[in-house]
Image 1: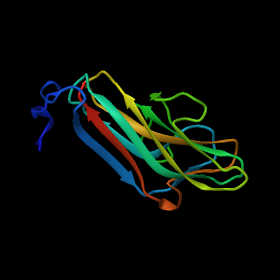
Image 2: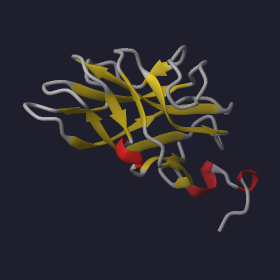
Image 3: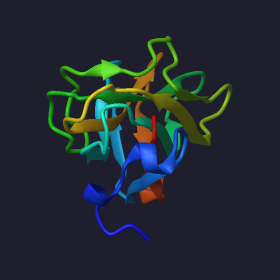
Image 4: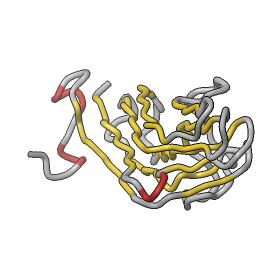
Length: 163
């Protein structure tokens, strides 16, 4: 067991070794009716062990769009300038994916359904300075998007991997 970051070196553990695991979980529902990304309240700020570290980022939550035939969309933003508080409108930062449906989405079809929102991505920030990753969400097509519906469990897990 490693007691602190100062005693770890990516070169000692080797490229690809898991250096540290970080997790933030919550059970707070947030909802919104706009097509603008807002914070889910799930975030982590990490001081990388090395500038060559990579981060395997994974989030899991339950999502719902309260209107038939509409979506809830979730994504991860890197180093936002906005607050990480739940339902704060996103400003600054870089979305880790730029497609229309983010990293995860749920579609209601002809019914309003609760669906799992889960995704993972490997990111290389190339810095030894503190980095923040935040899960954001929005609705698409109308209705109200609910993240962590009914205060269900949601989590953001990040593994720091030696580069």
